[in-house]
Amino acid sequence: MLIFDYDGVLLNSVVEMGITAYNTVTGELATSPGELPGHTLDLFVGNRYHVQPAGDALPLMRWCVDHADLAPAYRLTPEEYLAIRDGASTPVVERSTQFFAARRRFVDHDMDKWRSLNSVYQPLWDVLRQKGAHRVVILTNKNREATLNLCHHFGLAVSPENVYSGDHGTTKIDNMLSIRRRFNRDDFTFVDDSIGNLAELDAHFNANGRTLRLQLASWGYTGPDDERLARDAGYEYIAQDDLIALLDMLLPA
Image (tube, rainbow, N blue to C red; front, top):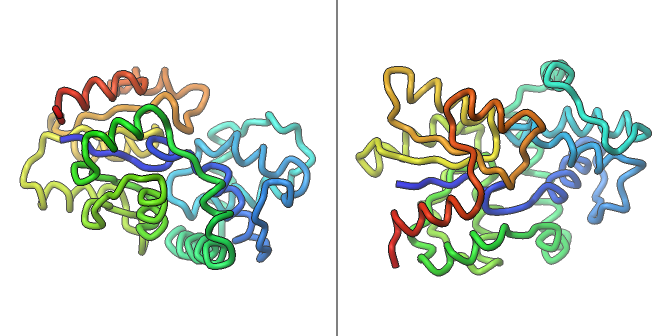
């Protein structure tokens, strides 16, 4: 059974996430990239791959705002990022709640503008539409409301019960346990663009033998060393064509 991450695998939301993070840490209601100062958004986009739960976007964005005069291509080392993340005074669950609330404020203010900051990854998206939205199961750190809104907006009518989200601080490990209980099986393949997410799932589910096949999406928010790290850890590093071929095998028309 194939399970999909959402942001960075099915949806490119990095600009929207950056603007929402900016609104969260500043209290502003920016709705377009040009409203962010200096190289704030470029720095966030370039370093987005470090972030796992949504709440961790906030200390990264605060750093981007404070260093908006840096070169837009500046990349944080893993150690620099961890120092920024771990220096946050608010627990990550609370930060995630704040982030999702700011997103809701943005959606309520101008849903069309919010949606326009997102795009889907092709040709994968259209293949999933052809296979049937009822067959798509999503495991994401994004909030459920936003995930369903954008899926339906872009023509993929995913079932609400098939979205395992990051609301209330629920982790991907917790959600994967729920997926296993629901479907009563343990032969899952999960594709994500975060090497950190894959490592956490690997440590939990594969410690006593592989029960979860892990794939890193090469088209997502990957870092400069992630391909090597994935291969060293035994995760498959895949292109969209690879995933589509797997879909054709697992979900024939």
